Length: 178
Image 1 (cartoon, helix red, strand yellow):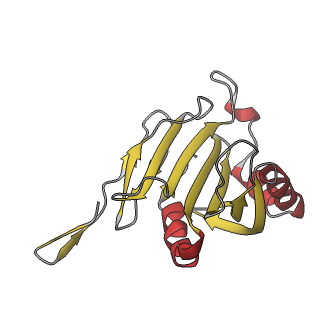
Image 2 (cartoon, rainbow, N blue to C red; image 1 turned 60 degrees about the horizontal axis):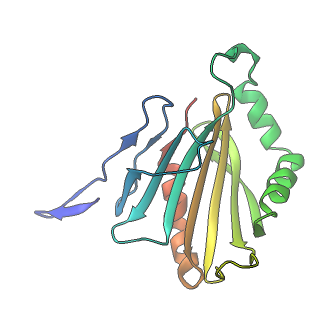
């Protein structure tokens, strides 16, 4: 958590998952902590402003290979980046997310030599569940030969335009396993 001590801003504490290599250096004003997640994810972090409960970001890493499999069989980062520059990638991301979201935009997202996608989307109403019409999501998907890192940030629709830059800063604070 960034704080002010004698006029000097202190940076947020970085976090790193040693087994996967996923790391986060939260932007000033945010703090990161290990979080519970779906069992398919090897590492999950919550990155939020102090006091946030329903809004903020989750960062998760899902390994692409089974333990013990041959890393030489994985696609290279160049191959992955080439695919993510294609329209088929954008279409795939849009179609996958369309199951749960009304997707507004899918844009290229370049970070630390990785090509991925940044998405702005609203949750679709789900019968029998409380409405989530007051929130908007900013999602980033980055693939490496080791797996997929997903950043999902949620903010109030009313203030989303102002928070989008903060959410992008959170996404850029992530170092995916390579």
